[in-house]
Figure 1: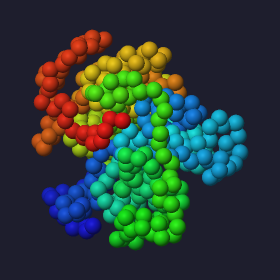
Figure 2: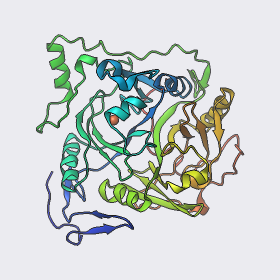
Figure 3: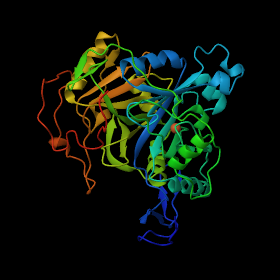
Length: 425
Ligand SMILES: [Fe+2]
């Protein structure tokens, strides 16, 4: 990864100003796999997301049994990090959940343990990680070095269960962001890596580093049974026909995100996520007089929505969290309609929010989990092509709130974007 000096017409010591803070961007350009960027990494997609909850076991029942996430691993913090901070905690386990072959795409953390281990900057921070996948180990390491040169606080870096190398750092409001590379892939047998192979590290290695296949061979040579990890099984009755496959619910999560968060200062937050992390603003809107900004990492209309904290009370949503909603994309419009009925029949509260909060998504179900977190279910997200243009509002599908047609005409980008690779279940 090479800093190449003045390339690309940027003024030396280019500075982007926001109302309350300057986000300094050096004139350097960095080669990311031979292509020059303003930073030594390129975020490819939102990979996973984590929340801190009071009772991980209770929350698990909803995200696993109702929404359909799989458990890939758990860690009992009462064993790994015992102490008085766990007194009275109903479930001391961290649960790693996935909807695809990534080891985790969603994480449930015991809130009292997080508040001991990584004390949040604010009492209403229940988001414990917003994790962005980059393209190589080199990018994770060089990102950390670069962030440090900018004076960016880096909370920790290394490697955790799930095998992904990472660098953790907060956004200006305190939401922990993570850059990751190399997350473990779980295959048809549902087997995760055994605990004996978990690659805990609190550092980054000298590069280049050995490949995973070498690590697996070394584990075998050390006498580790490489097939002794946690195995996902699911005994729930499977009676719903989802595209010709019997599942325990009438839908299948196929993608995670967007994350919609309230931020202390919207201008500073936008500068952080664009200038520092390289996300692109797809669109902005105004809700009740407040600026709302939609950002993307790839061709999706958005993976992140930034909203000013003042909107929280105006919208009447929970006031003890900066998380407005976490998105879970379902496999089809038919599944989304079925999900709405299924959730309501199972006593899950479904609420309406202004359409301006989900630009680029047409039909949406906002489901309130029993733990109070809002899940934004949808099936379609507008895709943004090479020229960076989003669809003109007049060309978008008109959605009448509360009206769910049985079928829809296809748009040019319906079912486009990141697709689900494997069997539905
Ligand atoms: Fe993570």
